[in-house]
Length: 317
Image (cartoon, rainbow, N blue to C red; front, side, top):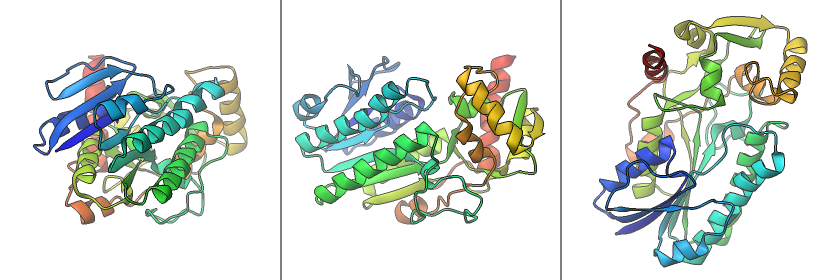
């Protein structure tokens, strides 16, 4: 019987993963950690309000944790880089220290397919073996790369631990609310002239389900989470009823940089390096998780964006 700890358990992925694991007969207990209350606790779940910037070794050892999942991470960029790194990278270090102290047998790290980088020479589909080129100047990606490096070192130093890494593309669905989802639903979308990249999407429910499959039966390694049939950016904007304004890159990037510096959130919620992810394709091949575990995506790209937009339409009505 597994005793599982999950950081960031109150988030939209965390709650879905909790519900899935609660129904799993091989799971005895789940320790849910977050700074926000858990909306729907259950007898199988113990919630502890905990900030990942604080040590958690005692929690893991006291609860006899043998399986651990790290979801806690700042997705929305902030202007306090030191605090951002303390949460993202420092939180990862604290999580891994707790895994070491408790002698966990399995850990799952929620990384991101953004670590491959958005580059003009990317192949049509990035696999788990593709180089992690990242994107300098984009703190979210820099911290995900640091997380991956720490995890790789932990795996090397703990060969008896089954270490899993998930690399999800853009997560969408009725409960997602972050700078990427807000970008897709803005009245006006500013993009680089002459581009119409594929937007790699995966539904929030598929992300949680895939993580559960991996935790329960997959061999160690990295796994992309990306729905089949990605959608072009202009198709997304058309479905969302968003007006597209295409600007020369030489104007768009400085404009985005100024907006970020002046904190004009209506214009830009991220550093200008983020624009490369809506300029170049960085579509990931998400078939490995299916081949290894038998997991099947319930939503393809068009169905994912429809589910996302349908809920937004209801919210505005």
